[in-house]
Image (cartoon, rainbow, N blue to C red; front, side):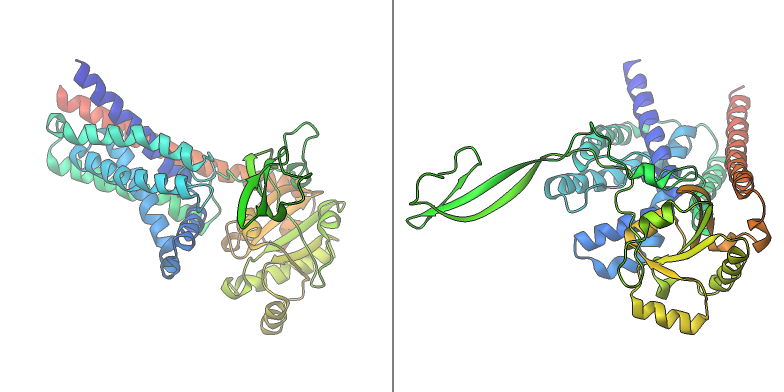
Length: 410
C-alpha cells in the first residue's frame, strides 16, 4: 500500500511540474530561446546561438509530452525514463548555476514564476528523487492499454505538445506573464514605493603596510594609523532590495535626448512599432506599418518605431525600405521583452498598453478609427477565447481517454 502511494505521489508530482513547466515556456518559445541564448553566452558556446529557437521548441514539447504521458498513465516506462533523463541533466546544471551564477534566472518556469538559481536547484532535488524512484519501480508500472492504442495516444499527445510553441511563435503568446502585458501601465510599473527596501551593500576596504594587504570594513579600517596606505575598495551586495517590474524602459531620439516621459505621458493614443534589430526584422511587414503610420497621422495618433539598431543602420534601413515614420532607440533586451515579434506593434493610451500585435496579424488602418480601447479589448477577448478553445479540446480528449480506460476495465 505504501509503495503504491509513493508511486502515485512521484508520478503526479512529476506530471504536474512537467506539464506546467512545458506549457508556460511553450506559450512563449522566443522567451525560452532568449534564455537558451543567455546560457550559450555564459558558457562560451556562442556557436550554438542559431540552435536556440529549435531547442526551445523541442525541449518545451518534450517536457509537456512527458508530463502528459505521466498524467494519462501512457507509455510509463518511456515517460519515467524521460523524466529521469531531464532531471539528471538539469539538476547538476542548476547546481552549477547556483554556485557560479552566470545567469540570474534559469528560466525553468519561463516568466510565470521567477526563481533564484538556488531555489531552482532545491526544487529539482525532490523531482530527481521522484524520477529515479519511478524508473526503479518501472516493472510495477502496468500497461493499461494495448501497445497500438498507447502508441496512437502518445503520438497525439506529442503533436498537442508542440501546439503552444507553434502558436506562440506565429502569433503572440496566449498568456503574457511579462510586465508589458495588455492592461499594464508602464509608468506605474517603473515606480519605486517610498517604503520599499533598497539594496544593502557591504564595503570592503584594502590597506597595505610593509607589503601586506589586509581587508577592513567601514567599522574597523585604520583611519588613525598613518602607516597603513589605502589600496582599493569594493562593494558586495548583501541583500537585494525591491526592483520595479519595469526598470529599463528608456527611449531616446537619434541624438541621445531622453523622450521617455513625453511618450508615456502623451495625451491620447500612441502607436509603438518595435523592431529590436532592423537587420533581423521582417522587412515586408514595414510596408503595412508605413500604412498605419499615415493613418495615425490622419487620426492624430503619435507613432514611433523603437529599435536598438545604430543610427547608421536606421539610415540605411530608411533608404532601403522608404519608411516615413520616426525612430527612437532603446535597450534591446527591453524591446524583446515588450513584444515577442520583430517587428511588433504596441498601442498605448497615456502609458497603458491597450493592444499588442505580431507582424503576422497587424490590424488594418481602419481599425484605428473611433474607440480604440474598445476595439483592442474585443481582440484581446478573441485571444482569450482561443485559449479556452484549446483547453476545451484538451478536456474533451482527456475525458474520452478516461472513459476509454473505464470501458476497457469493464
